[in-house]
Image (cartoon, rainbow, N blue to C red; front, side, top):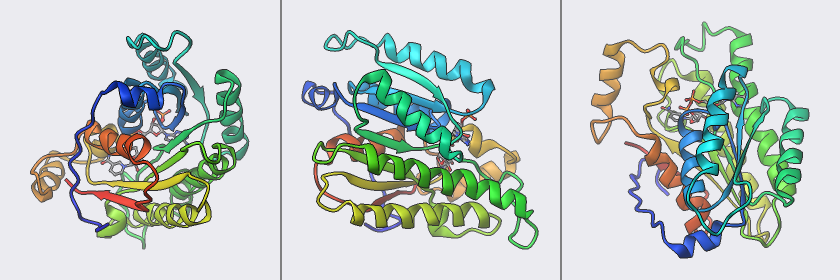
Length: 272
Ligand SMILES: NC(=O)c1ccc[n+]([C@@H]2O[C@H](COP(=O)([O-])OP(=O)(O)OC[C@H]3O[C@@H](n4cnc5c(N)ncnc54)[C@H](OP(=O)(O)O)[C@@H]3O)[C@@H](O)[C@H]2O)c1
């Protein structure tokens, strides 16, 4: 799949897909805000049960509101609990194990789908020659180590032969290698490498492992530290002359998590 291919997806809210997702438990990391939140809502609208992960105490309210929204979705075939919020810093191994343990205990089943959207960005736009080593470590700690810990746990817990899905979130800058995105792009390039290798290592398990690599998407992360002029410049450079929407990425993740049956794409890039 080419790095700069553009993918337009039309998802179908068809009962057939509800049947495929209704008893499934999906864990979405970084789901209190932005892309993760959109992905969680999309998967819930397709009938899945959701574990909403977040880390900041200030995001508890957002996560709880999302849980209430999902629990009140009108899906008649599910009368039990549909969603829970679980606080866990994805860079902390003990907390990641606890996240998966709590998810399994809550829904009394192994997870079926794991989406790793938790991530941070370098809003100071540092060059490699002036980024603080501690800041570099933090970006790698959450984006790379956090993804590693979650996909390791997912690979050990998602049921073999049960149509399990793992989707990681990279970024188009891992391919475009823009100046001032050094630590972030490198952290995401490592995510892509791990995604492809894990996909090969899980050969025969029926679990697919894919990454999505969005272009700029209108979330808090995107606007952080950018002047109006910088935002305009990014929009001008987008093929569609607009920022991506959370829903664009959610559809793509939904496609990989629900509609793609056994075909292994390795990764898909989305450039808007
Ligand atoms: N927006 C873009 O333009 C863009 C483009 C390409 C790729 N991406 C990638 O897409 C993913 C989501 O980005 P976004 O734009 O949705 O960002 P966002 O709006 O800033 O949301 C980030 C999410 O990650 C969570 N998070 C951060 N650190 C965490 C940690 N240590 N443990 C658990 N959760 C943590 C946050 O939780 P709290 O609310 O608790 O802090 C929040 O839910 C990231 O991996 C990002 O790199 C974004």
